[in-house]
Length: 297
Image (cartoon, rainbow, N blue to C red; front, side):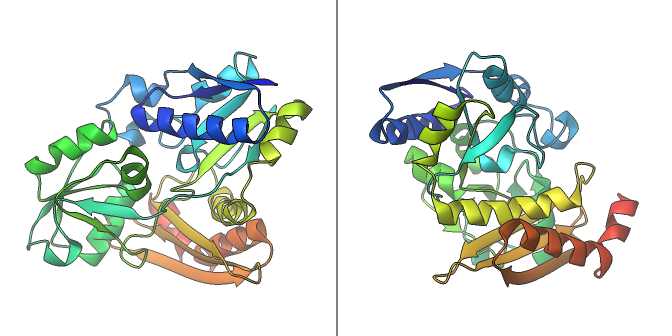
């Protein structure tokens, strides 16, 4: 069976797609061809992501390549996926997850001076770090990982995903992985998400062979949180789930104001991942005044 895998063209996206290709080949695929797709987020590398449309700007065109038959599988960073899967597609597999943490590059968190400037294009990262350190200043940052690392010398530090550094083998003099207690990861960060057509039984069966059950349960819990908040939520959202040896999922989820002045956090555990994520969202919205934050936004 020959598989066509659609992916973005960035070095990180290509690495991830090739990693999936290797997994699929080991699982029985005869060959895997990469189909490179340009997305809205790739074509415009200067406009802040929230102005481009936030989640979805790196995936819609990749999904379209599968829906129109140019590819059989869409390979995404799970953090880029909106809560809703387009009609005709299914989230078929989540392979083994990488490091979900963010990393500070150029300085250690404990050593950042008063009034330090931290560069990031993520409103989640800005909000969480501002909540912990209101003295910090922030600068925008777009581009691929190598481009962002090259700009680190212009600031006191930049923030990138630890999984990206690991996957591309990139290093810097100072890399400080941030504990989720300091900066809670984005939903799905460090995980890959593989979509295919709902009626493509052969591809569905092949993708099932490379699914990591624990990674899938964790991502389902985080995406349940995202789904319950709804597509209209443009506030910073974060969630991190792990799976205990007994199979129960432990989830920490957060909703914050864009400036980081308010940060609402919920922690809970359970056996139904999606229900767990949705319950965390309802708790923050209904019992922790999260709905007021949405109203103000």
